[in-house]
Image 1 (cartoon, helix red, strand yellow):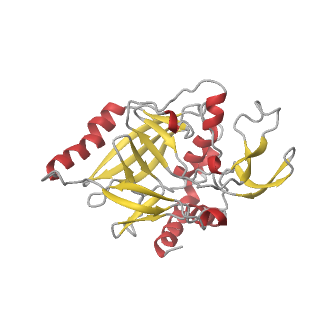
Image 2 (cartoon, rainbow, N blue to C red):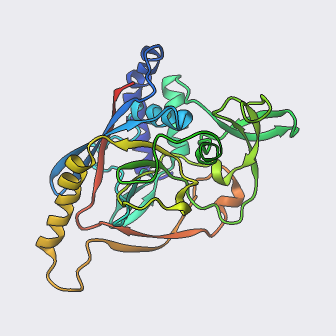
Image 3 (cartoon, rainbow, N blue to C red):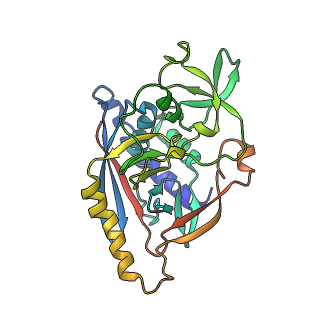
Length: 311
C-alpha cells in the first residue's frame, strides 16, 4: 500500500472515532428512505446533489453506503490534497469511489486495507454480508469476512417490484469485472431467506457479490437491460436543479469555453487500467482484467464528501 493510502487511512481512522459511533445513535430512528448529500468539486466550485435512498430495494447496499459515508471514507483529504475523482465520465454516467488521480494517472485505492485499518483504530466493525465459503452447501458457514457487498440486483429483479430503476438520477452500486473467476462465497441474503426455503445464508458466485465503494449516477433517459445486475439504491432528489442546471451545466460550460478545435477532449483516455489489484482472492489479483476509462484530468471532478442527512 502506497504512502498516500496509508496517510489517508490514518486520517480517516482518527476522524471515524466519532463518526462511526453515530451509527448506534441512529439505530432506532431509521426510515425506509434515508437521504445523503454528495458534494462534487469542479473548476473551483462545489455542487451538492441530494439523493434519496431505498432500503426497500436494497437494504444491505444502503446500510453499507451509509456506514462508509459516516466513517468519512469518501471525504477529501485536505492534508494530502487528494480525493476520489470521477474516473469514468460519459454522457450516460459519472463513476467514482475507486480511484484517485496521481500525476495525471489513475491510482486504485486499497479499499480493503482502509476498512480494516478503520476497524482496528476505532473498535467499530463494518457490517458484513459476504464471507469466504466454508461448511456444506446445505449449511454454509461464515468464513473470513471479505468486506464486499452482497449483490442485491438479481434478487430485486426476481422478487417484487423496484421503487427505483435505471433512469436519470439513479444512484447505482457498481462492481468491477472479475474475468473468468468462478469462485463462490457465502452470502447473507437481504430477504432473510424468504425466497430460499428460510435459509438466509447460501453459496453464490463471488463476481456478483464483490461491490466495494464504487458507485455511479446514471445520466441517461434509457433503462439499459445490460446494467440490471447493478443495484439502483437511490435517486437524485432534484435531478434537473442540482445536476442538469448545476454540475452538468458547469461541465458543459467549461467544455464550451475551452474547446478550441474539433480535436479537443474534456477527458483523457486511460487505457488498460488494471482492475482488482487489491482483491481478497489471489487468482483475481494475479489476473489481467483491465478497463478503459474516460477521465477528466486537466480539470478533474472530485468528491468532496458524502454526508447522511436523514437516517
